Image (cartoon, rainbow, N blue to C red; front, side, top):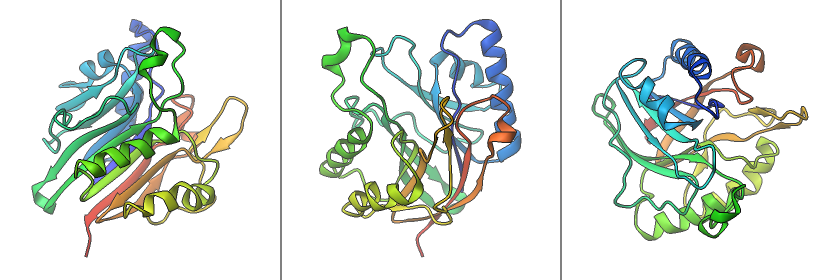
Length: 244
């Protein structure tokens, strides 16, 4: 199964001209990467509602109102591969580590996908008390919680983790932590990979995929040249198979 992840840098204000540009770049992503499932970060509910039925047949969005610009995470597909967010065990304290059950009968796949977009401290001080964890600790605390509730068997963590200096440091630090939960980083990720360029021109490895009891490999990574201002993150395309 091919899964594409991308921080799409969705517009903050949802003005008509912004929405039109967002639709064009999402259409570009679908045509270019030819995935069966798209895991998207930094988009609004309005943007996802527009994509549902017009660009993809199925879509789901999750976000909260702690940040003033209300952007969250989304998941898209043309076939019904996912359930709506697994609300019965999703813990909104972890911003954002959002679970979906993925089923692909053709490939005999059945696993939990966690759409990750870790967040900084909210700009709105009124909500600081409601934001419990920031960046890396969002994922660490989420894993401890979901492990305790028995929801980590055959799982994927995928998205914009927002804390990678480079692939080697991620694998040696956060990757070592994940080993405690039997997660491993996707294969074919080189130490030189860069997935995010900040406005300061600093480069980071922020967009990652880890798996547990699944075989995952990187099929394709985007380039900053092809983005042409669409986002400051490149898309990544992964192949997911059952472990042999």
